[in-house]
Length: 111
Ligand SMILES: [Zn+2]
Image (cartoon, rainbow, N blue to C red):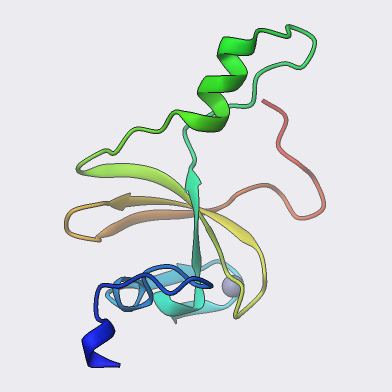
């Protein structure tokens, strides 16, 4: 819908923005960005639950930067292999520098 350009789709986010780039999925190959969903900042690390510092959890859950330029992000390939990826992407030009699996298949990242 042309009059909806730039308006977020409640289910898929900014779908017209996602179509601006191609993501090289390690499993599926080059795919349209519309097949992926943005999953958040990949530079945040989950605090150790044993430490129990509320300020660390507040920062982890609620505080986000809005970087201009290269940034690591999580993306989910929901219309393909359904894997989580980490993209090193320029938030201005949408150039993608690197794509990695978010974690080895079957193993969660421990940080
Ligand atoms: Zn894929």
